[in-house]
Length: 294
Image 1 (cartoon, rainbow, N blue to C red):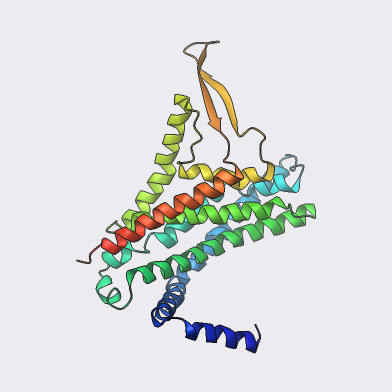
Image 2 (cartoon, rainbow, N blue to C red):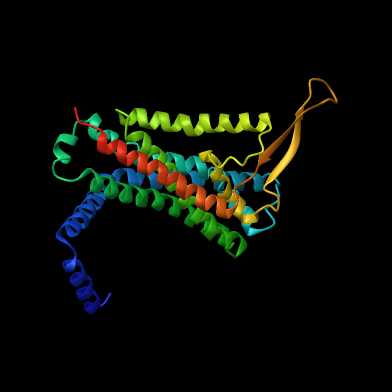
């Protein structure tokens, strides 16, 4: 950015209302502080990214060493590294989002913070910082996957960029859910446990229930359903659902019919995740605003 552009930016900033300038300064200060505060977690998250990548690499090398054929395309090879991307995103989201609000009430630090900065500005600053840190870990994982794919196949599948975009949007969605729980939970540990249980068990159990009950409505209300587009984008199916039957009560007997949705459409995924995140964050903000420090 040139000196002239800097001067124009400063001039525009100075022309803003005092209240707006104060808000931007406080949000910026919060973002900076949160980066410093979560420096340790940032290195841990990057370590987790490298660890999961290495495990995936070892699995691929062992399979090839035992005679398994390599995937036919670079895209199929990259998908092999994304089998655990949903779980990885969940771990990163609870790491950065679990304490975003609950910590102030758990450690009783709110009495020092809230009189000095409006809760809304604090909420926005923390959310920006922690999402950026979460996104950084996801990006590093994709960089490692992309470099490995290029080394092996001599090319980078163009779909990996779309996959990264969906992964980042899904990260924001999962982080929003964790922030929502943090807005009314008393302890950070409780927020983390509840978030893990809801995403790993409750949503999956609902998915199974819908499957065996034969419901034909696309499960856009199940948060974990959106994870599927991260890998499906490499080869989007023409039919996004499959029909079948459950096993019958005896040999050769068919059970009830079922319908399983494979992935949301690109439009459905984009709108669904944005709306889902907006609802969760709006609810979290109002709960935070109304919450009182003991």
